[in-house]
Image (tube, rainbow, N blue to C red; front, side):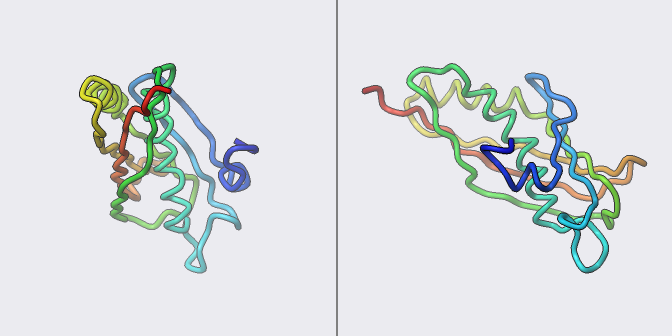
Length: 142
C-alpha cells in the first residue's frame, strides 16, 4: 500500500478481513483523517469504503487474459451518525463483481456493478453507507 496508495498508508487504512465475497477495511480516527468537527472526515470515509469494494473488484479481474480494466464510475454516500472513532467498512458484494466481470468478458462489452460498503464503529453504531459503482471492460488482445 505504501508504494501504490501512499495516502491510504499514511491515513492508516487496514484490510481487516478478506475472502472472495467480503472485505472489511478500517480507518482510524486520528489527526490526518478528522475534520474540524471532531469526526472522521467524509473523504477519509470514502477512501476506506472505496477500498473495501475495490479490493473485491480487483480480485474479480485477477488472472483474466486479456486483462480487464476497472474504474470507479460513481459514488453515493449517506451519513447516519457522527464517526468519532475507528470505522470498519464492509462490502459483501464479491459475487456480484465476479458475475459482472464474467458478463463483460463473455459479451466483449463494458459492464458496471455497484458495491455497497457499510461503515460501523466498534460498538456497532452505523455511521455511513457508500455505494461505489465500478466499470469493467476487457482490453483488446494484441
